[in-house]
Image 1: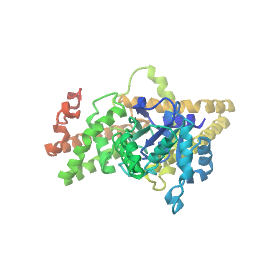
Image 2 (image 1 turned 135 degrees about the vertical axis):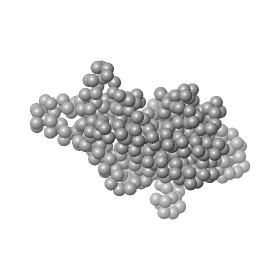
Image 3 (image 1 turned 30 degrees about the vertical axis):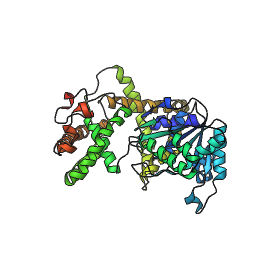
Image 4 (image 1 turned 45 degrees about the horizontal axis):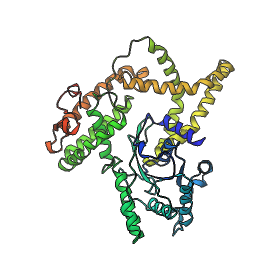
Length: 449
């Protein structure tokens, strides 16, 4: 029950969930899934997309089990509690914890572990704890050769509603050297296997030196690929690696110019959000097809009923500073409380004003109507027709003026990049070698980039 519910939550929160490398997962049997941990409770939610066929047992910090509702859910999902050093305030005996993990593997379950030991505000994978390696060797002592499969969780913007995420499943870690070493030096073998997990996981996670670098790389990739249609986050993720060394070199060779570029990018991002568009594309004229009229009517109706709870959730999340790792979790938590209450209140209001038949009808259709509105405006956005929410309904001329400002700012960013030295300039490399289009040409001059 709970896994299916949380998978539904994931599909609502994310516009796009892409899984690559699923063939690296066994169809059944014991398994250790080792993942990076950039986004608190959202990360274990995403691993639920591997179940079925896998029977997952998540390792969760013991303090979560003391939270009334969360603890109930974790126990129902058979999560395994672990008391961390920082909660214990001293040495911890982990023998019973490792014994429970090994027992779960003997029963054919898959252990989900986040070896960083906690969710961290960092654009890179932190040092790994040795728990995954210890569980692996304990399982071997009990006659189980359990594969360790790293899973890279790569968010486009992990705290943003309706962004994208890529689950990048790596091949099983090669443990042969560590197994041979374990016969003579178990502690060294555990450290070596942990280092190998870290290496493989790092190959399947997009990392940057700073959050500012990461945001700049993602936005530059968007600008460079705006002429291309139909690219999903997995396609774009593969292109990010072409930008990373260039941004690092730009920062090292041209600090004043890089600071100016960062200011332009920050301004671009603010304007894009005000205009109600994720990429800043200039909206094209509305479609004239009559077939879209009914969809437009239903979508705007759904938007009207969801505007107040959406703004309320946004206010509740933003009323006090939160770590990046907690924003998405709190957004989902508040949404699960606010939206049902808002729908009940709206249904009662409609029933008292129009009739209880209308109120009951509202209660039956509001959820599918809300989802229709969400998907409709996203569909319009992908076609470059309208912002993802009806900004033009209230800000028609202002929205068009902002779009023109975005276009000019985007062109200025391109010119700034063109001015950097050729050793660090992605615009001066050929697409044959890098897959990055030449910004000195019009966007439609690079259709094959």
